[in-house]
Image (cartoon, rainbow, N blue to C red; front, side, top):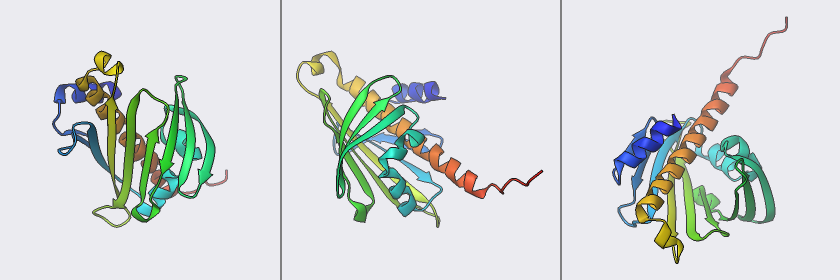
Amino acid sequence: MRALVALTLVLAGTGTVAAGPIKVWESPDDAQITEGETTLAVDPDTAYAAAVDYARWPSMFPDIARVAITKRQGDDARVTFVHKDGNRDNVHFHNTPQARMVWFEDTGGRAEVWAEIVFVPGEHAGTTTVHSRLFADVHGLASVVVSGAKVRMLRQQRVTSDLTDLHEYFAKQVTSEREPPSSPR
């Protein structure tokens, strides 16, 4: 399925891409931003609370193997995500609870990367619309090696992957809550 989504993104260029319940598009305001949306089967407060529980991220995002929270002060945090492939992302979070917005920036890469994820009430009671914006721009020598089209494709893949993971995580949570308890034998 992920290969099909990636192929769809490559072929789509800069238009809107819909992969099931996920929509991804290039920002009309900034060429370095990719946006996306999906709907979760959970209320916005619950979704936001789960998203700022960084220790929970390996169960939300399967490519994350471990989380190390190195500093937490109010709505700010410094977190290292260790991915299953061994890569590490050092991230600074600066969240806005009143807006149910998770905002973070990568602090250790060769590119300028930040993202915001906002959880707002969905069209139906008990649902959440998740709106994601990912900024990524490569500077210096890396910009000679990595084209703008490649960066755009990587942004689209990341937004699609993250929204798919969130959608699947909350769908599983709702399903497990609805399952009746097993009867003793």
